[in-house]
Image 1 (cartoon, rainbow, N blue to C red):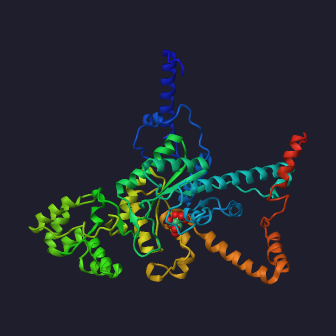
Image 2 (cartoon, helix red, strand yellow; image 1 turned 180 degrees about the vertical axis):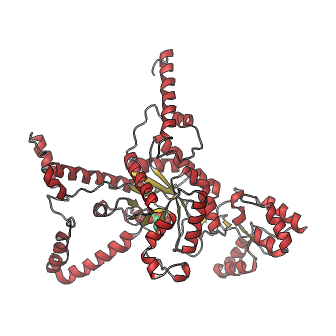
Image 3 (tube, protein in one colour; image 1 turned 60 degrees about the vertical axis):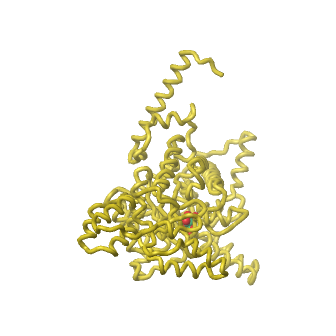
Length: 523
Ligand SMILES: C[C@](O)(C(=O)O)[C@H](CC(=O)O)C(=O)O
């Protein structure tokens, strides 16, 4: 242990004070200044070690920030795909400027126990993919630069010169309590993620496919997750962008009613019925269908939000009087009192009766719910993102326009599905569908748009076609349809296994040459 003399203590205090000042200055930079930190620079400085190692992803994060701000000013968007394979990413770089590391895709391709996207893969799955892609990008950059420097200056204009693409990574719901969220944030930023998204889904309950079941956490828990990520990024001094994704669209359950801000959306039984779980258990014991029992119960329970229950039992004047007493965040307890005052009676409503086997409460979201959640976490994050199951333009418009009425400068992200219809009742025509990406950018500031699952659909299509061709036509077909087509692609060929190009054979040669003392760069 170091001797703790007065000089040592003074130096230690000075270094701490310097660190506090440096953090305060950092928070004033154009990249950081819009974030409303809920803690002081002193808190952050005290959570740091005595030496802060510069974060590897900060340069890419600043590049991403500038790129997205520029899009925001111009009403344009950065379009990308989800990817997990560095080889695919190297080709994306010829047209795109960012890459998305999809958790869902990682769950299929980077996991020895693949399966549908329930975000049930180990928490370090995505950071490992980010790491792999980041290192691969750095290597391509190295070999490309070496190749350029081995040519005369006037010859370099015709050589490939792809940029390193900032990586946006799927942080899902943080994979656990705050400590896991903090660790996974650290791992993502240290692996090279320039942006991270976090959502408000309940851990272990991500279900997009099976009938009912999407479950969100209370607003307060979501806010704490976002806060935990911001805290960790500040501890690291990382510029990494935080995309606050909200998965409340089509959510049917909420884990708890601890936060009064969610009470308005919780469903209760308004009829005199048994608890749902009791009815289901009785059906199972009697050998009847649990699903049927559930359906019948749902039809008989008179499920309503509390406000709907009030509306159903009072006249317009009474309802207006009730509404004047409530606002965002009014608890059920206060709502009951307001209803009693307006109607002179207790309103029948029980949110315990519909609870699920896991204890979840039934929930009915609206676009307003999503906006409220998004506004709670906006001051701590850099972009907002509402996750949707289908592109309902009316909802998209309502969400973004309401957000913009509160935060005119806000930037947004959006993910397009691979099997989405664009029907007219949902606000689309074939013409509008063609321009959907630019409509979103221009009208709402959706500056970053992704097709996360392209590798499943698009690449699968290419592979499936090639497999058919190869088995039917052999090397003759390959020569003509793949080799010749790839090599003659303009302005640059599609990279293949040619030792002196994409594979960087010249880089290996340069290592040999440098070790033997040969000069390799040419001016
Ligand atoms: C975007 C997403 O986070 C992903 O992992 O790619 C998924 C995609 C999906 O499962 O459809 C998501 O939207 O949650």
